[in-house]
Image (cartoon, rainbow, N blue to C red; front, side, top):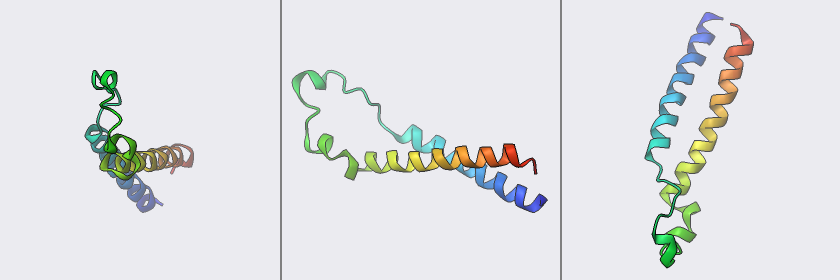
Length: 79
């Protein structure tokens, strides 16, 4: 049982580090002064789901779910 707890804790630490790095890689959501002139409606602005930013958002959501699940398992499991 101790080996399983150690493996889960190592996976948890890796997820924490990955989540921190991916959140720091993302751009801010504020459009700034570009929104006034309509500069935010570019091709990349409309297709963010297919861009690198969209991929980072998807990975962030997956990692957050894993973070919550593993933290609950470690807390409730009382290994």
